[in-house]
Length: 315
Image (cartoon, rainbow, N blue to C red):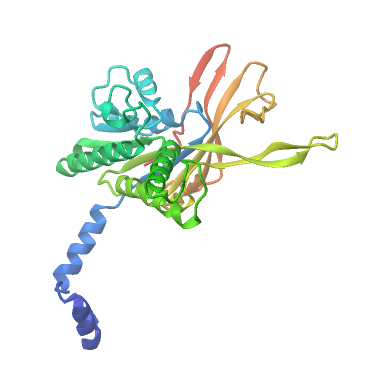
């Protein structure tokens, strides 16, 4: 028996503290079996500024599943995923793009036509729960999920939080200041959906996020202090970092850097040529040997687009 390795006192203590559960060999074997069944390969964050290939890279890492006929769900939070899907897989019937901020959906708008962010969150949660049921009913039919717009979703959560604070009289205007502890409500709303997506019984789940500038007052060379960008960080709630076993940061490169737009410089590129490069910042489990490496995933020269992706990552 599994429990025989435990002393009588320890066994009695466990059973006393959890009287509704019978702790024995069968219980632990079921727990191990369930944990193994929930083991996943990819819970990946793809982080970049706009138009750097985040969605395309996620789709490329689902290419084998898509071509095998497995289903893929794309939560189109940023309202830009459908065009990418249609461009790469124009005839694919097994990719389901879910438009959340749909202009034709009256349920997400208030009477004055402003966006009702609480309704947007409810709609997102509803779709995630429906998808969870669909995957659980036929897990072999599903290849993966893409949540395209984690930074935008976090803003939805903040708007919903501010509306709630306004309704409760905590703040007088939607952009009013409030106690730091109130941010817990935004974080709770955000993590509730991300955690649910993370726990889906499917091997591959991708989350995309934007980068935002870190700005400070700097000397412009004339002795005048001006606000300048001194770096960039992911636009996510930092407590969610632990969800991602893999993190890949993407950036656009040209011959000359343009800090205002986040374009980085690479003198190896010719004038008019540009590229998107991916740096593997986190890689737990498989493919750890590629941690810290940078690879060109897309290049454009003489109006010719060449897609490379990250074929060295094997799952």
